[in-house]
Length: 131
Image (cartoon, rainbow, N blue to C red; front, side):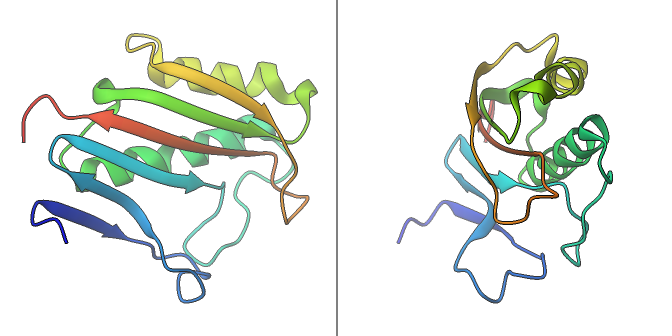
């Protein structure tokens, strides 16, 4: 096991069912798990509004980054999963608000989710400027 590994525990309702961490930091690298628009009980946040769902996803990602001493400025890659391409403008708007100055590498993937209420999910990778 790596000695410089730091894990942010998953606190969602399904954390007891899956072996995963909210985020993992190894050296200067940070990997944030796929993040859905939920609260800590696993309930949808944002209702049917994809912009509000995306804002919740970004809040959770930024929170995980803060826990390992990182910020949005150190994000180098985003993966955005969306259920409906018609939602792209609202997702992009929320993403732009957070990452306009950073402009990380970013990929959008059209997919489906286990719960059809979810419209968006994101993953983030960051490289810390210092450890």
